[in-house]
Length: 193
Image (cartoon, helix red, strand yellow):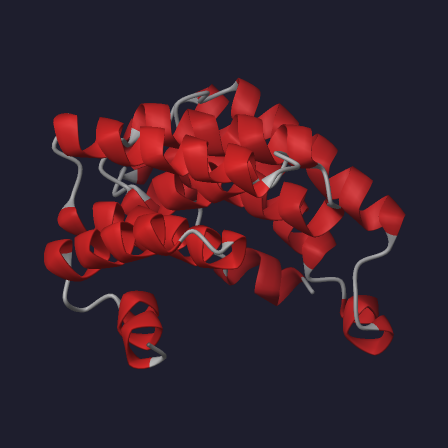
């Protein structure tokens, strides 16, 4: 167990910070991150197939403490989002995803994950479609990547199709295909026509 703990790279090493430039806070944060990873990699997890509730709580506490020290570390926030998702904690998941998007707005995958997580709370398909259409308009006006715009448009097309709204379905499908020809979801929807 000690060997595995020693070989886990610290977040400072991942960020390219040399050992000479580490502050006490950074070292403490890395230690807490190691405790988190050690908790999550407990060998008993493999035998049971999933984390126990006490492991999730312990890992969450360690990671929350680590985030207090370098609060703008996107790697730690990503780990926090993943842990919250495993624990089923939507409030923390959304908080972590919002923080990552704030710190690294160029991360399309995280922005998409946040948008889809936010619409999951909306009960009606009409409401979900309206949010996706608004997000698509924001993405287009703010110059977000074409890949992101395409994924939002294909999600909107899927919802429109579920609603039986053929006009909105075709409109969003065309947008998805036009903005990113590599969008597999849009290609599948087109193939199914």
